[in-house]
Image (cartoon, rainbow, N blue to C red):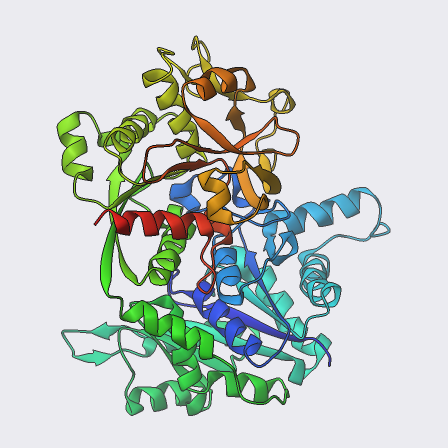
Length: 534
């Protein structure tokens, strides 16, 4: 079978949920036994989001091959339940950098290098190479931003050309748009969708399917109006309604026969979809028997997308433990005294301190670590959260007054967290951290070994600072257990202590490998321990 291509665009406003819609389409096609891969195109000039502020971009997702990517790749992996790589995310920066490099090498033989055809050809080659390289049946590519954005025009022109290059039955266009409900008028308004589609058609792309994002189901009249003015069959006007559980969206699309429309449009014949496991997960998610409240203590809590994978990993683990997840967001920059600490954390079942960069809020994180350790609250520290555990233990248990990370205090007497020699000479910030999958060996008879039920694991990293090997022995002598280490014994990956229900820190990011049908073991056991404290 020839590789088929689906392009998902968005209109009217951003943040409509193109990533979840793209993931849902991928899951549906995979349920028919098709080999599917997903790809995100980000029109910004940055080569990747690795140096971007979380308030600007949200979470930076990391693939197992070490690429720093858009957070939508997290959705893709969670819905498809397999790992993607650096070829699954494209930015304008990557495209222009590649074309300029080729021009400098003389590969264009003296021609004038232009957006069309050179930039668009580079874009098309990245899309088609992904399908050919992985021998997939369907490549689904999401175009970031909205139709009309100036930076997205070369990408839309490239995907317009794809139907000419690959043939009508091999390319499908899906457009996600907003249909707002105006309370004063008591009706849905279809004009934003009409204008969005008109903008897309002016570029030369006629959408085959419209996904209409709205608060509730459209009526037949609105559906007919959208169909008529957007030149789309009425059965191809699909509701993308708000739901409590995003994992229900594929089932809502399936109910409206979106998958059948796509298969027909791409001339693919398949038997019935197998969505049994997914339906069971959604059913369990919607009817838990208990509640677990987790405090997420960070410095980006005003923008929840900065912790998207952590939120989803906690959700997966809660569902697996037959619980409804309740999150309490704590700004660690505002934890100033014991009274505030008790008010914020006294009633929660578990505490999580996630990763981050920079000094702001770190002392609050360290105080929260101490509270969890002394009050025996189930605690999980991730990346910087683990480093805060080491700093807190060094200060308050091992007697190293003023212990710190050189990231925050380069004159500390006890630099328990420090740059490793290989990082000291690095000047460029982008793509230079310890990234992607790294192996970790687990100590026998440790909690980490019990959690993973194996003696060696692979997890994903994104950090620059490490536990200073100089202080491992004195910390160990005071009871800190380094239960996960690199194969050469030089990098500390997991810390824990005994005589505590759950006090675990990971230098890696276990949230990146959590899936709805297979929660990460660290998160699963953290939630399990938190429920045992109820």
